[in-house]
Image (cartoon, rainbow, N blue to C red; front, side, top):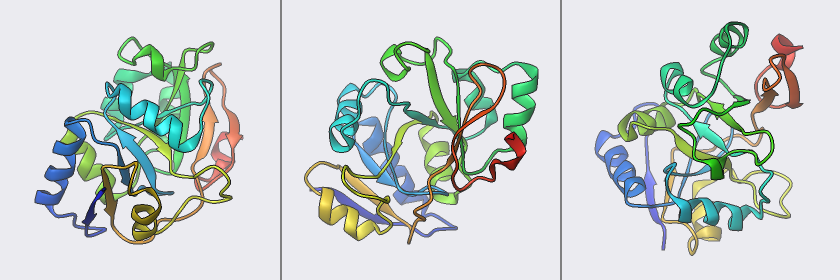
Amino acid sequence: MAKYFDVHPESPQPRTISTVAASLRSGALVAYPTDSCFALGCQLDNRDGLERIRSIRRLDERHHFTLMCEDFAQLGQFVQLDNNVFRAVKAATPGSYTFILPATKEVPRRLMHPKKKTVGVRIPDHAVTRALLAELGEPLLSSTLVLPGDDEPMTQGWEIKERLDHVLDAVVDSGDCGTEMTTVVDFSSGTPEIVRRGAGDPARFE
């Protein structure tokens, strides 16, 4: 059964955040809120967690996973950025954008796109997510929590616990999340290509 954590959306309780981070370090797979939708998350080196995300969402090897980062300094450890891309990404973060960029050697190969050697990264604008990332001290390997056959992500923590109680270790709930996924911008060629239009305003990349 998944543990259920009710967290204040603007002032998350430090003890609860510490407990969730400890469970992630112990190999947990967690559903947690972001500034766009609920996401599934685990540690970068959690192979079992990665496979559980693939299983829950029925993802193939071409799926771009996202590294949810606390800040720009952390993001820069995991992806390659030239000066132009650096400025464009920095100006749009934190926010509801996911950027696809060439991965550095810090990223495990199993998380990269098998041919492009790219990975998704983002810095969320959500107090609970950022508190969790700060406590964890590393990015969360993440994927939007939208189930096969569903048109939209789930928005209620209790519903997630009810439906996924048998496959998750914890649910972090800070109230309703939106249903609009992030805007995805592929910068792997050096120039922006909008892959998905979503919560972040795509106009700045057009």
